[in-house]
Structures are given as C-alpha cells and as structure tokens.
Length: 242
Ligand SMILES: [Zn+2]
Image 1 (tube, helix red, strand yellow):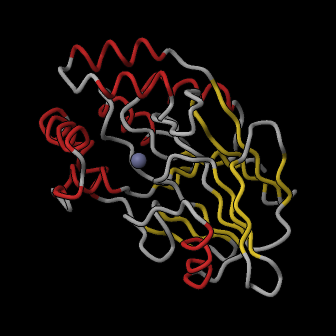
Image 2: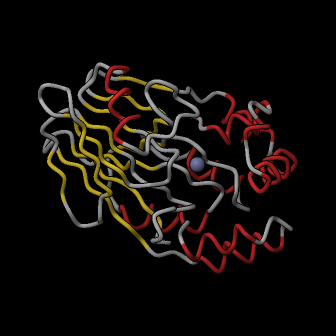
C-alpha cells in the first residue's frame, strides 16, 4: 500500500500537478494542510485536492486565516497580503471545503496534524527539543506534520529520553522501527534550499517512509504571482527554495 503524504501546497498549482504526476499510483492521499496562502492558484489547488480519491485532508494556519481571519496578525507582511488577496479570489465552494477541514486526525497507528500534535495549527517542529516534548502529546507510533516546509524525520530511542533529527534526502528509504514524527516537506514552497516540490510516500505494510522531490514549472507560478500583483519576494524564494 502506498499513501501519498503532501503538505503546504500554498496555491502553487504547477507544483501540485508535478507531484501528482510523479507519485503515479497511490492508494490514498493524506494532505496535512495549507492548501492556500503565498501562491496565485488557490482555487485550482483546492479543486484538485478536493477531488482526489481516498483523500484525508487537514486545515493549516493559512487555510484557517482565509476562512475566518484566525490569527491573521501572526503572519508576516507577505503572507498576510496573500491571505487578504485569497479571501477576495476564492470561490464560495472552495471556501466551504476549507471551512470543513479538521485540525487533526488520529487512527490506531498514526496521528496527523499541520503543525504539531501538541498545537495542531501553529507549532513548528524544527528542533529536537520541540520534537521531544511532542512525543508525549500523541499515543500512536507515528505522527505526520507539515508547517515547517522541511522534510524532517524525528525518531525517539526505546527509553524515550533522546530524539534524533534528520533532514531526509530523496531516494533513501527510511525503515520505521521506533516512534517517529515525519514531515513530507512542502509541495508549493520548499525551504531547504532545494526548490523542487517535496512529498512523502508512506507504506504501512512495509513500514517505510520515503521522500521524493520533483521539478516543476517555477516560472509559470512566478508569472502568475506577478500578474496577481503579489509580493515579488515570493517569486525569488520559490526559485531559491527558502
Ligand atoms: Zn505552510
């Protein structure tokens, strides 16, 4: 079984299309939120995600800000600029879809959250300290999070007193042998200085996790950012991956 795990699409439709084409056959899609924000194609992204078969989808902080202005003062200037623009552009149906998304979901094996198990919407899991604390906030073997836009893996040792942190590279199959927190990286705005769209493939039977990276038409997204009058800085960060 192959589950496509994606996060932080951020209105970057060319990147989303490249990921879906690259992942080819999957049995399910788990999306960890932030379908919109930063990017110029919010409607296209929401519509494409909403129609994927066997979809499980969470809301992220940008989605919630577009839906109900939640925590809008916590965003930087560029991000809040695009949130107000997205509020004007997004269709009623797509807003309705975003408004119904849950903030967290758990099965008997895995917990899903946009930010972290402790604070599902806003906490960034970037370092060992914050990951260590978060292992106490979910009971499943695995947690999947997004939000940092970094393809990170955190694993805890058997006694639960130390955490390993790895920035995963594509092509390495990660065997799940302990409790783990994985981040698939970002589809639409990677921040590890690799501008390629990032996604994860989870195989529950093989107990494996693998990061994939795929090139997409960055120029197409940049042109649409310019055409929409969105901040120029957002173009630069896409081609540089930060
Ligand atoms: Zn994000």
